[in-house]
Length: 280
Ligand SMILES: NC(=O)c1ccc[n+]([C@@H]2O[C@H](COP(=O)([O-])OP(=O)(O)OC[C@H]3O[C@@H](n4cnc5c(N)ncnc54)[C@H](OP(=O)(O)O)[C@@H]3O)[C@@H](O)[C@H]2O)c1
Image (cartoon, rainbow, N blue to C red; front, side, top):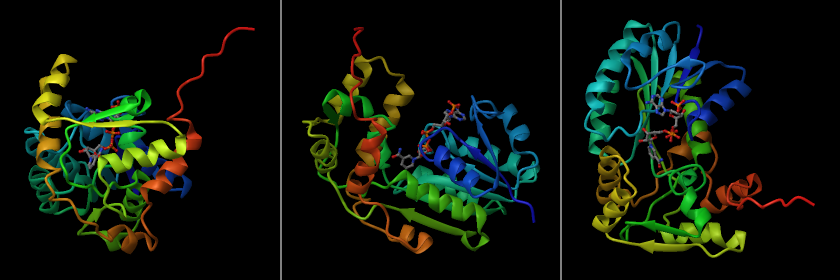
């Protein structure tokens, strides 16, 4: 049976890895996003059918987050379009411990399509490819975190699980919870980056209302401010303070530790401030 795969969000933290890993395995895979070869915009449903027609499986990364109020309506419409386009399987990236995400998961689970749900904890790559990179480079990360520790997960491990789910029907109907192998506070995570770099990176914790005021000072859109307030006030209350071994059971190897992620990321130069080259 053919397995033509579409990766939505193919330039993102997980999508890029899923796309590259599938390519290396010789799979028939195509990239989709607003700026990709195959245009796809979550906020322009007229782009969806074209992107999915002729595809058997789709890796679904929603933007900006399944927690937003419009997600249920959008995912419902998306699943209908996928069915009409002849798609057989959806692999949905979701977040751990998020009720709104579970509403969207249930739409996929009840769709009648083959599916795998991949629920991830906070990605390690948020520190190197995501919203915390600039502050890490600037030497101070300001976050409204409480005392809860997080089992940060490596986006490479997520991508490996997603690839397995896309290629092997043994994962149909499964929901996986993907975590790293250790619980870390943000302070511990930042110090695991700072130590091998030989740099000081300060972790400053502030209250959520002060944090929201800073975001508003930077004139970030209200939707984004709402999402950040939700993520930091709801998710870091201890509900996700546990480790799961689904990565190990799917991949038959241990999940990457934060230290291993740091050692792999340093040679890429992402955390090295650019050096000014002066003309001789
Ligand atoms: N970060 C975390 O810690 C974490 C944890 C658990 C779950 N998640 C979930 O992960 C998902 C994001 O996945 P990711 O981190 O792999 O991706 P990402 O790095 O956030 O995604 C960037 C990709 O999304 C595309 N994109 C942006 N806006 C789009 C739009 N309106 N329509 C279509 N494509 C769009 C971008 O390409 P273009 O610019 O070309 O469109 C790019 O390919 C979210 O649903 C989030 O809730 C994240």
